[in-house]
Length: 268
Image 1 (cartoon, helix red, strand yellow):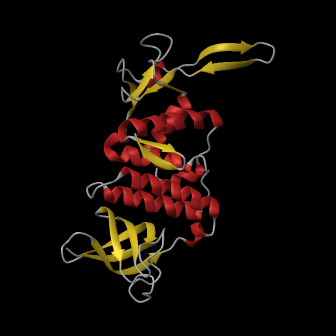
Image 2: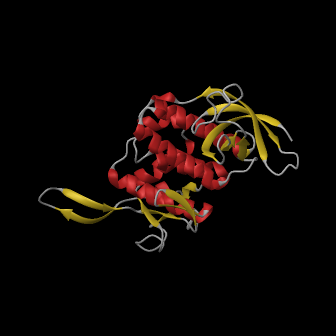
Image 3: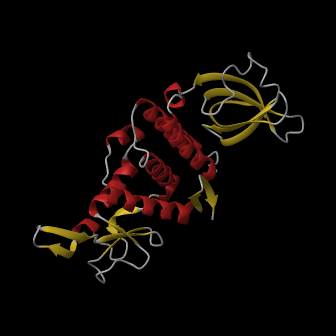
């Protein structure tokens, strides 16, 4: 079956002297692996298209037996020069591409993820997004858009609005300096699928829940409603970033079975 579709090239490899294989993320079909026979020599059929991080329109067919996809033709749409010229940004992009590939998105959920990925690449090409923030934001946003968005308004244990009960329990105070150390009164329970508060139970949140400050919980809600174009204006304190990082990593591991280890996502 032949089709023509817009796609982003995630991976490229050579398997014979002039033949190339590509891992494409198609807007309407998700992940597709196709072979471009003679691709390394062809300047007419694949001009500028057979490279990682290229957006193009590709015509894809099959071999006679229908056992694998064959790339027939490609038209270059965008090569993201602003990303290619910046090694730091390329590293952030690689993290996002590896996550998309690891999630193994099917045809039904491909379109919103494709749009999210392109908007993320376009935003990063034009603006600065912190190295610590972009993988976190992209991973959280993509996961939430897979129908896994948690309820961040109610305590999943007592059912009351979490903000009504959120308060700081001051664990220690330095009277000489007037500074206080606050313990987060909220937690995020991966198993329960949302926020838990301290007001409806013991002074400690559920065993195994990740402590979450009020600001971190509101930021998580903001991420779910934001778009990549909003991300450059976000700035987080180190502790809030650590809290969100732990919550998002555990959420992804629990629901998608993926964990970032040694520069790649591993199934767990």
